[in-house]
Image (tube, rainbow, N blue to C red; front, side):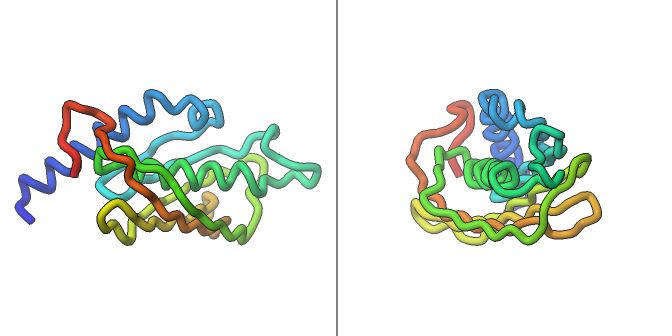
Length: 151
């Protein structure tokens, strides 16, 4: 791959992520931050607030899934093609705790035709794994930002 082409792919991924982030009110409402995006990858963080904890003071299940799913979406859509999840599985390894900042790191491991597979690891600030997520994506077609080509 030519160096100039890689720069173009990175710019396209950043533009697609910026366009998605501008419309992603749910992730922003949960306090998520888009830390990084590149072709086939994304990193998001989310602080665990009191509203996210259960009676044991732990964050488990839906909020962690939502963080992982958001990272998955940014990674899959980084090619500037509208892509959705059509199957996913999550394994909860540990709980988040009040005050934790969770990080979801998504990495596309396969993209063939209209289908893809992306793995997401959610960790706490100590680097301990909180959850692992595997999502299968399906490309619908159409650009997220029409000013850039689809990859």
